[in-house]
Image 1: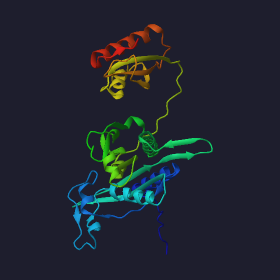
Image 2: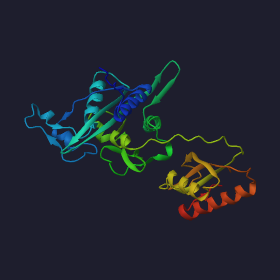
Image 3: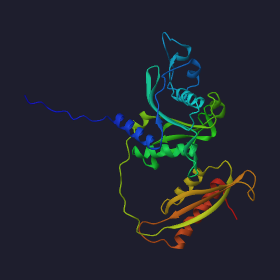
Image 4: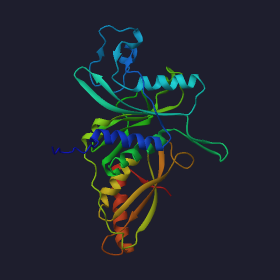
Length: 315
């Protein structure tokens, strides 16, 4: 008899898990599998819980009383164990589900404890800090098919119990909350006998439910660009994101790129202020810009920065 054949293939979730593992292992991280049962105290300090925790009907231990609602405690316990046995530079990740009553979510946890690069011979010593973790996460999302324009990183204002208030951030994908990452709050890390640890916990379900970007090819620019560097004095509370948004929106027709390359506080800068150095690149797609065109847009940007943020050119 003739039988039809079925070609096996990976589901979207399986493809995402595989891509995640490949990317993180390429950065030198090791995958771990930790306990899914936690204590009541750990349940109360869960990071971004889904809802009401699920208790076991007949727990065999007070330390294994609830099904975990976050990966944080389990992962930190693993790091604590390694540190206690003189295993330093723990670069770890875990892919697992968390649970609440009538809810579940698959999450990714990443922890950097120590150095991401440690090569005494070549004098390379790179700490696993906020920026190292951000770079890993951005690369992972890019490989999953999301360009930088769809990824938003903004200061963390939602959880300063687990995270350092000034060294952590919230990450969004197409404006949907994806999770939190950054340096753990010193007092929280101390509970696990740890010092400076960076951690991320993100929802793989959100990534899986979001369509990847379509690859678009554009021709190489035919006309030259013109760059202008400026140094502006603003209040310390003003963020680089606010400044870049004003620059890009005011000069959207001609501004091809804007970036911060230096921030300075100290001598010759008023107390409570900071100097932010920016590079703005101007370019047109259909002709070569002249100085007058650039000057008009550049002056409009400076005027808008002064109006919105009270920014002054640093002399």
